[in-house]
Length: 117
Image (cartoon, rainbow, N blue to C red; front, side):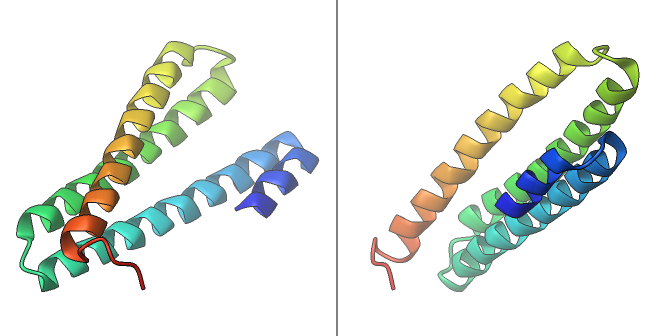
């Protein structure tokens, strides 16, 4: 992910936008599989409540990242027309990331007894 970010600074605008989209898709895939692992662990430990929360949060993450992509394209084409919406999306993304981190922390302690492999 760091390599994609660094390469993005060296590219021209259109190529940087395409690389940013690819970076966002990879980020969504990583979060999808991470929360899928939490869902699988919760299901095997008979905790459907945690599995359902992980499912909802991964759908919310992908949907919010899709909105960020749309707003980014709008801002790129409109030159600042989507600034307020972008700020609202950043705030929503931060809240969602805190919720995801809390879920992972809770799953670690409740499903594995706080033990790490």
